[in-house]
Image 1 (cartoon, one colour):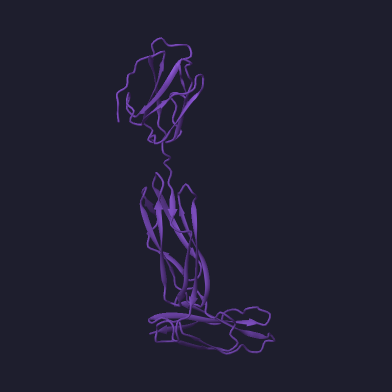
Image 2 (image 1 turned 45 degrees about the horizontal axis):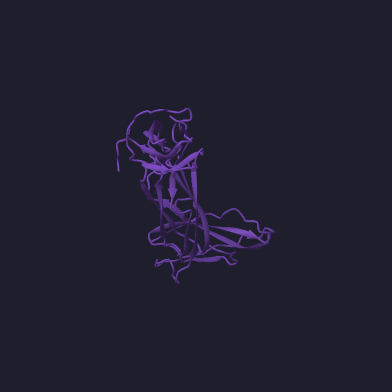
Length: 308
């Protein structure tokens, strides 16, 4: 209800006329919830507080209080605007059967205009994923502040993990979302962990970290879905007085330097069968010798293989 209220001064005003003391008259309100406090008139029986965004209206509420005499009166108000607009208050009281009014003007609080980026997960677990059969999960980025937020970068660490789907930098307006596709494509059996770090101008911090985890699981025999396998063999190093414990085999996509260890434990023989290759893919391999004291040799020469 909106009602028109008189704006008359108090007739027969006394020295102890009730006065709004909190918030301070003319001040900026602290937020959408505010407690109004005023002094009392010992002859007053009832007080009314009217609040509105238009002068002489009560569209923000009206409150009636009948306190004990000589006590301070407080009213808690919720739902006030946070747009920096004027807020008008009228304090009314009845004393000796006479209605009195006093007018006040405040300024509504201003909602903080800060950019905020929120993620819908702080960790992503892929569980068991068959070797060379990538699994993808989505991560939602949302602008939850009152100002636009700019996502400047997204970096991924950890073997087998990648993130795509968003061209960066990307600015999100308040309420707008974007989806980042996080992929786990294991090339060797065993558990793997990584991190996704997202940089922005968010008020919550310049970067946010998402923990990544998954386990590479060998598929059935012949396991990658390819009809091919790569049979590797090498010569043991010539006698050098160093006792050899075994070998580790490494593989990378052809022409790259992102080598991954294929074996999960030391190979004692001089052969290895790679059953996790994909069709129409080039691979580079090398082998490292490991001594009985755990020292690895320099990599062997690189062997390039093209799978049809």
